[in-house]
Length: 252
Length: 209
Image 1 (cartoon, rainbow over the protein chains, first blue to last red):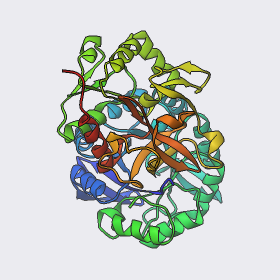
Image 2 (tube, one colour; image 1 turned 90 degrees about the horizontal axis):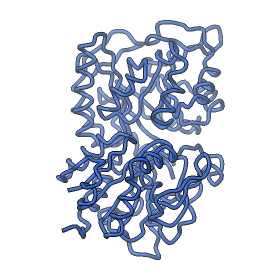
Image 3 (cartoon, rainbow over the protein chains, first blue to last red; image 1 turned 45 degrees about the vertical axis):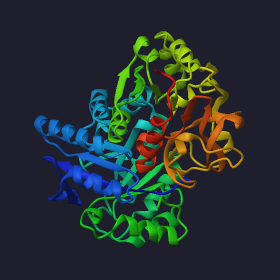
Image 4 (cartoon, chains in turn purple, cyan; image 1 turned 90 degrees about the vertical axis):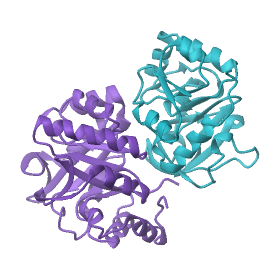
């Protein structure tokens, strides 16, 4: 049977891995290539590289690091951050990315998902959405969660699926960085809305949060986290062992 | 040396890197002469069948691959590259494949119940008990996991199946016909299990002097 996936996310800035808490206060954690190898050897099912470069020079550094990583790591690599056009897809795919995740780029240019899916196939196009409750309604936020676009989130995801997004990352701003568990209510609603794989992000603090995620929302395909993995608060092999013991199918 | 067919479909970087990782020399080419001299061949591919089949045909590589297959050279198709080896695909219409492995490519949606299509992620390999394990699985145990991304799969091909995977239904994970074989999953994205499959492929004796 297909397994639930565990995905560490590596936020990369200046060639280093960082993790923001509620998207602010970045901390330097480790070398992306080393971390990627470590995760690949220790049970990660996939890796996300998130580029938070602010300049062209940093962007070039990011693609160098991506290339170096792709030479050493033979599990699926998703790249996100700064993807605004088909040429951005091209740039990271040429460096060894398997999937490309779009967020603000798809908000600015709603045709991007459709065009990319046509050109590279849906399997390659991931929509990542930062979602937050505003007056009881799920809204899509742009620019790293700083700007409320006013777009209703479930409708946004439904349209993305129609346009060819092959996978959806749901990042709950409400639970991100708080380490009190995933946003089960939001994820449930997303899984009832779309029929492509859904990756849960934001809120993992302990092993039990992943167990609860997969047991409470069976439609979720994967759990994504960053700092709890980078700081060793959760070790992926023991996380997967716990999931296995709870009857959740994982790749051991 | 393994020759990777470069016909403008998909990203060959990871595949080339994974072969390098196991110490295999690679050559990326669309040159018919080079392909005819190849010791062994990998046909990669992602995306839509029709588009990929057209690219192979327009470049004349469809005939080259069929000629080469007839000489006994080991050929491995990966994902869409595997699907191209079959007779026909029913992805958005009906399209001719290379006809090197008997069987057809059909959507998985009608057979997988309420599971999601595409199947995206890690699933385990089941080897048919009524035939010997195919040489590419020499280093792989039943139940080991490999990475799949696909909405279509090879069907009507029981005699050619070398590995299955369970996704509500049993789906073709790998198939072969003589010296031509294919994997629906991506060995170059399947960690150490995938590298072991590629290594085993490079160890299959070649007929090319």
